[in-house]
Image 1 (tube, one colour):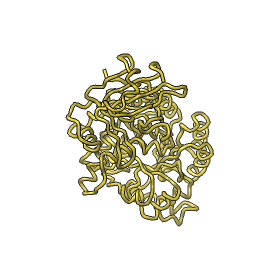
Image 2: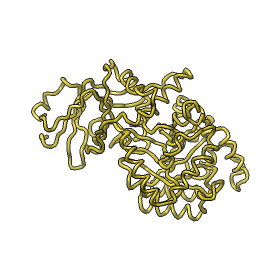
Image 3: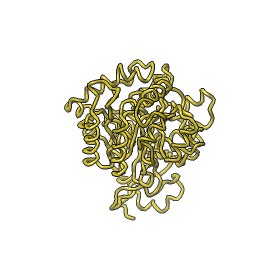
Length: 438
């Protein structure tokens, strides 16, 4: 241990451990150490306790004091569409009409390479400023748009082009051959950074899903799609598949994905609001994860699509893994702070217990890292992990425990939700400062 290899950060510290536990140091000291493998968290401790071993190493040069601020891990947004940034505030009455009227026309713009590159640079720079450093992302159908996204994103992300070869607008329809050839090329180029991404069973033929899923599984890539977001979506899916050879007898939406090879330990199912006990059992058995998007599924008056409330208790009882996502642009706000707020508030309004701010923080940080298989490296700021953290200014009176402190922080911009995107002042990835608010 040497002075040159250590850095010290003083602030209030919140470190999520699980659904019910979040470490709270007020004030706290975060110690990071530069090693050959990178900059890692060395220690977390209450300021004033156990400082003896560091006093000789701390100096003005290697100590940063974040006055009136909180240090916490960077966020994992496990379901969002970067190409839908422009439709976040478009009128929403139901999922399928919103897609047809606003989302699909917007995504056709990304056929232009120059436009895609420009928007990727803008979007992912903004994503970083909100404190999101990991997750799973949907692009448009276009190969170059995925490349632009992967070139510009900073952090631990898997990104895929949506595959659309049936029941899709003409300008967004590929052939099965095109879909599979693009998938093959992107896997070869980006390996596990690529996520195999059928948009959903309505737009992607079983042939593409099954053949592409085999490619993804062989390359150990993640697979992602949408599942059971609304009742009319489910009804439409089943009406299509009863006429597809080999699927005439399917009873549920989940059956379609199971039969197409889309389920598994590296599979992410967006939404999962309307799932039967049998479907949850299948998801659990296959170790498939569900990504809950509260701001997108929220009532229309709350700027969501009004899809319904995700039953996290039933999901947990079935032993199905789940995490949180913003679902930009179904969700209107990029910041995961707003997603946590929405998760807590919607359940509180329905008098559902257990939807705490502690659970929300865990499900938007470490739970996502666990699903992506990155939890030994990141997801929270426990010793031994990479120095990935954000700084959030907070001038209010400190609370007596982590849950109450989180409640204060998360409710800061309830009345003007756009300001959630501006909450973070600093973002560190592998010990390097990615963003600092001017």
